Amino acid sequence: MQHRPRPRRSSTELSGRDRLASLTGLRFWAALLVVLYHLSRQVGRIPGASEAVWYGRTGVTFFFVLSGFVLAWTYDGKQVPTQVFLWRRFARIWPLLAATTVLSVGVWVALGKAVSAKAVVASLLLIHAWIPDNAVLKGGNPAAWSLSDEAWFYLVFPLLMALPALRSARGRRRIRVMACVGTVLVWLSGSLIVDPSLRVWALDYLPLTRTLQFLLGVVAGLAVARGRRPPIGLWPAVVLTVGWHLALVPWSQAVPDALWYSPYQASQLLSAPVFALLVAAAARADLDGRRTGLGGAWAVRLGHWSFAWYLIHEIVIRVWLGRYGRPEDVLGTAQVWLVVIVASLALSACAYHWVEHPLERMLRSAGPRVPTGDSRVPEPRAGAGMA
Image (cartoon, rainbow, N blue to C red; front, side, top):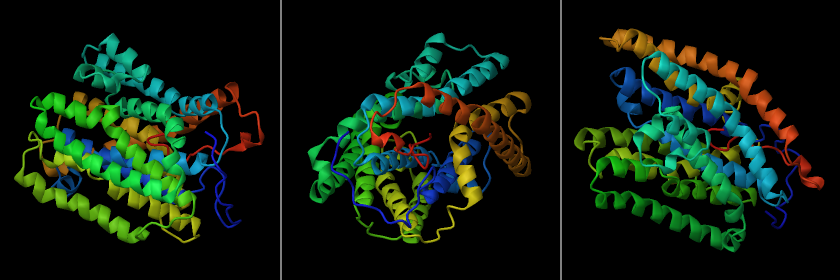
């Protein structure tokens, strides 16, 4: 990944593990959106709250866009061998994937549910999202399907960064427009897929479908890295993001999820440009040294735990439902929501400090290294998707 050096940054810009602290903070909010989505759909509804997060699976789309943004922003102009880059990404996501898959399978077995060995192997090899079989997609740790997509993004990232079109502002604009148009076309292609289960796999899980979201993040990351300012500021981007999700509420009341033009797939596909604006605006605010309210000490800490939270929370939901079943009233539902959020977040903090972070450091130190002065290229802790 060899490119011309990026413009020199001022001494006021952030450096270290959380150079873009607001993006780390946003990771927590995106993970919370996914958690509330699963609580609403699996545990029970809370009036008002559940309607607002009924399509909270868009948090996964946010992470895909964020992944492309932070990787591009971090590695632009850096001479890092591909094998070093891929090893760093493996060290980042695989140890916690393996640990939570073991935990998830243990819970499945304890609940008396058979687990396919094929599903577990596919999960550990990060290929399960390529297989149109629900038992394989969810047979290990159901939340881990997105890591199969992330692994694909990591493989194609060095190739994307070598594209000549990405080296000019005009080329990036063209790619951005093409990616936005392509996203709409992908959504419209759902009308051609009659089988609902096949449509869900092709539009929700298949890594090729999700690549456009990652690409939008890459283009936005390169633009910000090379001095471009996003068309709107952070808080207008936040308002736009919230408005998009609220617009899904009446849509969901009018159109069943089973139909191709329902907000189910639309929410995950068409939200990518909105998230690209949000991420770019938050990053620009950090680089300008402006306070955002998203990058405080606790926000960053929660952002660090978000990867583990994403992988663990559904397991905690499953344990609760297997032991106690679904609550029967709104008050009981709210109590279960609270218990699951607190318990899963506490477990995630432990997983981050005792499993994820130490194993990543161990694997990174044991793997290949950059043989030049670029060996100090910082790891993109503020993003890289769920990781």
